[in-house]
Image (cartoon, rainbow, N blue to C red; front, side):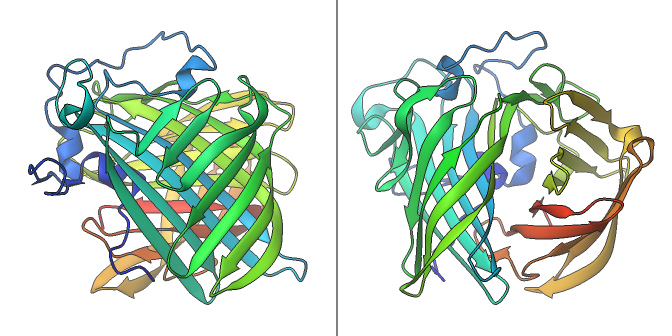
Length: 361
């Protein structure tokens, strides 16, 4: 395991800027996501998304990420998880500056999980010097040697096919991602609310990837296949000041449906929930707080913290009642802003696999 450790995709956006990046450091924590975003662009309803342009960066907003999770298995049925993330954070508002004066900070985050191990790594870069970035056309997202790039001219409506690569000291993976269905706009046409106030992000997903490639742990490569999920979000102030973190799931149902859910935890206990059900034919249905029941069942103690690693999820109006269990209950990212993230399985009224992220515990 890489001792430097990554920080969560959503933790980073409110998180740390290392002193080595221009001599300025800060550590806002998750609550920092609720601080004033004066000078940055606002997220408002009614945006018209444009692809492939929106696959690229939006530097007028403070925070952004390109994030992939993959539920994989080898020929013997051994399950794995893989994760790839590129974050962008602006440390100051205003038009992009040249070279080392550029206000953009980039972080790459990669991880693999198996039932008996969890490995992760990270890398950082300053914008403006070519070490990291994203190009919308032809699509290419990279930081150092980690990259997500087109294999042939990419269909902007489904952002496929892609190649995904990353490596740490004791793991690596190279995956091909294909999709034959279009992107999904989360929330209300891509406007994803995070509270009953003005906090929101622009958010879309590609939940329909099939994945195949090679995953290596301790110099032992295996051929893997499975399903993958891409999330794209950007915002300037996605959390309210009284929200401490979130519990987020992406679920692949055995019957072909997909489901995205999250719960933003609030100090008063009136947690804000949202989600989207995606049918095999591509039709979607928005879910609101009143639709979603998320109940922690079992906890894992990690670094003197009690982490809810087994959950019961119920959506009565969709006749869904499932229990989600982790592939590895110790999928813990012990970083500057510790969090839990890893692959899960679920059973009950529906069966399948997915990913769970929990921050702020």
